[in-house]
Image 1: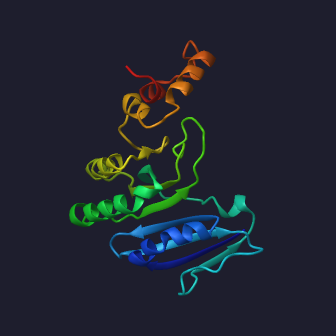
Image 2: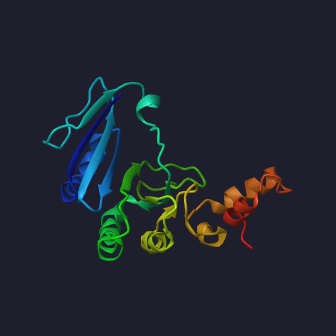
Image 3: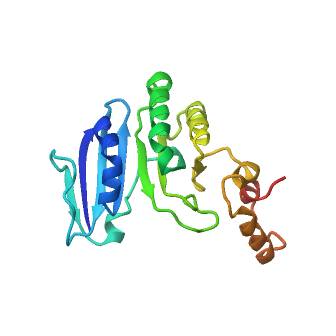
Length: 212
């Protein structure tokens, strides 16, 4: 696989986002609110990589096996909220996220936002169940107050039908989550049949999977 990275203005990246999604095997980008630049990363088969839409310089080019190029080592500590959105809602949702960050949070938010894309699937509790998905993740320095910022972003994500990442910060419980997954009840029946005594149901999982 070959991973190429380049920097581009945010407006350019948004204008060409759909085109790049179709062109590359894997695509994501970071937006840096205090510079209004993005860092775009594309991962493709090294034997026939498509030419990037971007005409500027390639910042990095790495070749190697997928399991070496896809993951990243991270020593930095941060808090993160990520919601998975219907791809058709991404443009409008991101515009509102961008507006609120610049109007309300730019003074305190120095960390980047991550946007990535996920193909639709049919797994019962997958964030991409039944729909092509584009995600927005907001990152913030660990130890600094994030509650107001994340709550503001979460309200936007929910307005656009977003589903929270299961392993990251959010405030939803089973009551709200059930409305977001068409196969929720099927999963619940199977889970209860396989674990009728709730041996695997920790307090955190109970909050997410069992309506009180």
